[in-house]
Image (cartoon, helix red, strand yellow):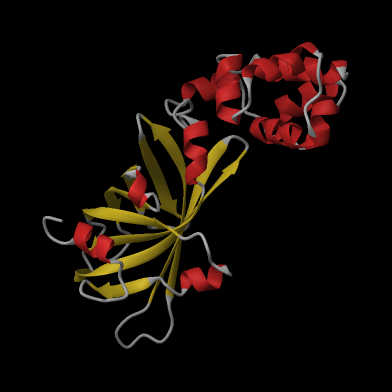
Length: 254
């Protein structure tokens, strides 16, 4: 067994509130993980990769001599004092084990002030990096006499708290937009949807705060992101291209 691996894991776990929380967030059996910490067993290649990604390392780094791992850890992370000064440091990702099933690509449907009788469709991706879930939203609008799409990208973080997903993101440019989504997991018969509300400060035209109901629909079977982006745009609220479930939820009093 690797004594360096066990020592390194104990060191990394000491930075967390508890080993039990580490196991929950990785999604690994507590009893089995305890054997890794004691050096009585070595993780499979699959589990080693999951553990390494959770702590922000590649697989081989966990096998480094302890002094080298400590140096790498300290170099790559902010100090504990800095993290404690951030009031939201412990908020994201929340319950990571419950958040993981929601990773993937979605279409987002909502009403916007620029198109009161229409529904806007955007695309968003949720992915996990170093134990945190990030969002990447792409808006590609085209309408009227426009021949080219106007592309907007927003990046943010996702947390799972008290049975709901919270997504906060911002635009990657000056005069940036800012938005937050609060979403509830659906009943089993509609497990491809997330229903909720969103509020945002649009970048154009007048920086006016706005709120809307919103639906996320999981997009599992797409061949390329281009196919996904092609669904973005502004649709009439009566368009037959829109899912009836979505039209109903976004209709007045829906």
